[in-house]
Image 1 (cartoon, helix red, strand yellow):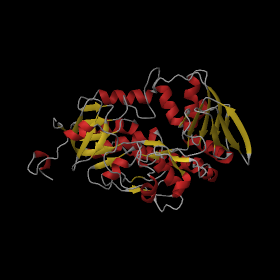
Image 2 (cartoon, helix red, strand yellow):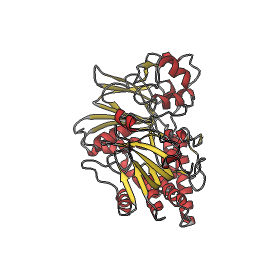
Image 3 (cartoon, one colour):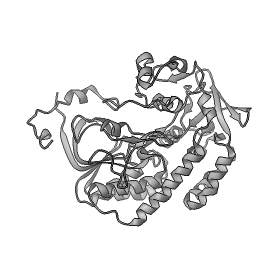
Image 4 (cartoon, one colour):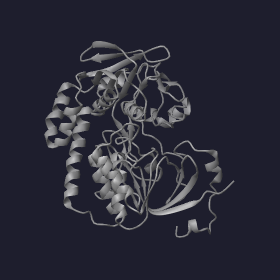
Length: 434
């Protein structure tokens, strides 16, 4: 078996979303070698996901062009982080090979994932997350003529509905669980962020309803209908082909936690803790974007730029950048204040509702479990293919269980990659200076 090759760089950026692209461009001004890796086929992250027929916004095109035009930036798309076998080293894998990458400075821009919560019928084919529906459509999945219901909480619902409508789907309902007072309160604050106000007006859908949440999905082998609860007990049912249901976003902190970075509580869940320069608790590791807390692409771009400059020891260009970041931090506060899932969302699942989809563990099997580790030991909850990324976040939301320290591999990996990894001998160049 051929031993894996060893590459190296001055700055390694994990994630090519808004934060990652901004971080890479800023770090490149330091003159050293910058490597960016991302598991998507093209730069842009989830919010700027590319695909057939997708027209990227101007900010996405500008960020991508700024990154690819720098000669000292190398971008590896379709690449996953598998493990961190040694200090300042990551084991990576793409479709063709596995290899080791040694870094001097690391910037984590690992983004976020959807918070998916269990309810009756949520495992039926045709039921996805709101963001997942967007990603599937952008990836080329046809939905023309399909009847779609979008439910959950937050502005992502309107964005998903708009993407589906533009692709020719019939969006029957956009069900926002937040009460009308919170929706109106959020709208009243948008004058502080004019761009967001204009975006909200452009995305508004005639089927939008507040104080409405999913109750159940029904079908035999595939989704056929969705039942929603409105206000103080009213019901409505829609025959539909797809249900896109998301209850917000959860920061992706697995890699940071595995590397020893401290986390801090956020309304959306634990996030990587950073200082004013985006430095984490581990020397030479920085973080930016949604992995430090959910706040949108504008906040991520600013944090990424600050992280990139800080990583190479450059002075932040102007105080205006920090002032702008403070404005978008305030936006994030409003977002969480107005759209946090309400008490009714916590009671959607019944004892027989599947909680862990990978291992078919029902909610009732978790009764009596003390914490996340106890649940894994007694039920195999979180032991499947997603390694608790879905049910673990749900357990944290519903029960307050903190996730354990992630263990490698962080993602499914080929046996050939693991077989090709040979730990270096004590006197090898890889261990010098440690």
